Image (cartoon, rainbow, N blue to C red; front, side, top):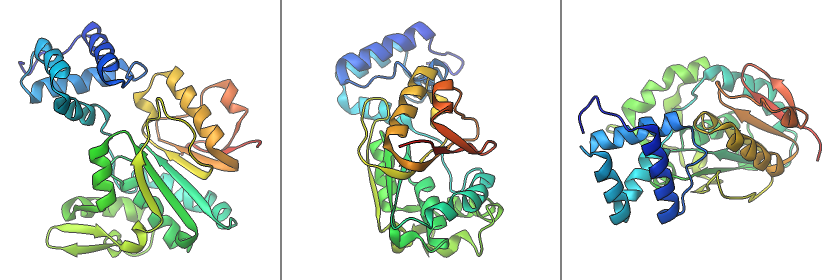
Length: 275
């Protein structure tokens, strides 16, 4: 494939149908623009034409796993959008501190950076031992990284500014064991944490949570799917539970505006109304 070539929208639809038919994964409600970008990238990396992509998906299950990883990978970093974490500390932590036990769902957790950011916040507030964090994603390779909790030292140092801007004391490296060019998250932060596969498109409620964080994931979904997932989150939240969305995401539906109270409009922090 030439660098300036791109996959067309009808071809994207053809791949969506093919993947659903053969592998049972439904990307029909993902935004076409996002899928187009990512499929084009796959074709360029593999030097494929559209026919090659189709042929390989049909005949090579191993390639499908690579395809899935590329399509579903989310850009992530620790303490992304520091102003969100500052608001979270001020407006959500006081509520969570009143609970005997706090269950947190980090949905679309990718390689674990956001889940560990929340773990650090809970530890800083003295709440880590009475909280449990579930990190879920569709991407099994990312989940393997999350379970290990090992990141490049260069990457961790690049998060240092986010950490400071979030208003936290000390340094982000205080929460890692450094060995050569690798940084491993401290074991007490990995405790009470479980990373597992969950597909927001097709899977159901699996627990009741005081907090659900799903940040910078909705932007890849069409509005109808966003509403379906909001319903899943509503049903998964305990009464007065919190929902945190990403900087460019918001609850637009009138139906869900009556089900969630706005805690912080700018940072997209909401609280469930009703039981």
